Amino acid sequence: MWDAMIKLEQLTKYYNKKSRGIIDVSLEVHPGEIFGFIGPNGAGKSTTVRTLLNLIYPTSGSAQVDGLDIVKDTIAIRKQVGYIPSEVNFYGDMTVKKFIKYASSFNGEVDEGYMDHLVEMLSLDVDRKIEDLSFGNKKKVAIVTALVTKPKILILDEPTSGLDPLIQNKFFQILDAEKKKGTTIFFSSHNLSEVERICDRVGIIREGKLVRVETIEDILKSKSKRVKIKTKDTLKITEQMIQVEHQNGNISFIFNGSIDELLKQLSAINIEDLSITEPTLEEIFMHFYEKEDIS
Image (tube, rainbow, N blue to C red; front, side, top):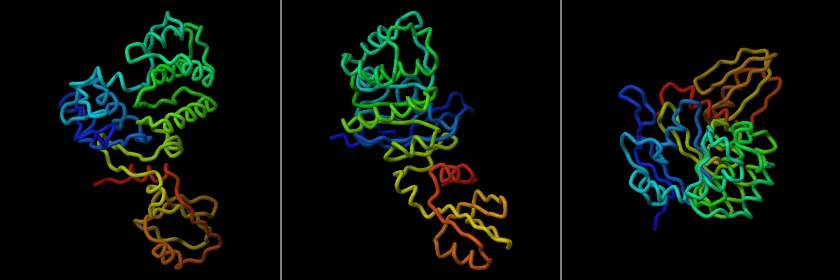
């Protein structure tokens, strides 16, 4: 039995000898999970997605989707995958409804009842021509097109770009429902609040290399703490303190270490007020990008 719905093994893509895309990316996405793939623009997120879908050929390494090889079994894979690209370019002279049916017909049978449900949730006018739509509405078309054949796997590359907050919320409701059905979702994004909200695990990519894969819960329960103190004394800044900010007599920072170590350092000064909380995913994420060397 195949125990990973998506599996990458040292997947590498160079665009030429000097221009890296991704380097030795290895990870597994479990059946039925929402896996977040995060990193800033240029980190290698879209390259990973496009290589995974065989839209561009890997330089080396391999990957499988539901046990199928991404190069040898491209057609079979696309019949099982719903894909939302970061940029959307469609045939402009077709109506939304005709385009959805046409584009989806290559990958399976369209569930018209489900299509109507999605169209209603996303407030999409299916009688308008594609060329008359805003970028946000074109993104809605991409969402519906990816879902109407009820694929086993969704691969989403910055899927919420262009969507207003209300529609984003509806989109997350749709993904929650898909997860309950057992759909496997690979969610590439640079929006950390989105990833924290819906994903089970997260992979962090930096300069083309995967630097960490963890559950959202484990990352947020790491030893890191967000500390805010009010003091008139001078606090000695140590290597365990990052993202240090001074404002209106307050000092705030992320502390990477044990509570005992933190309290020992704070005991050396007079404190007027103190707050110790869990850092956000964004604060933890930024730590990975501030470090000079990640092993």
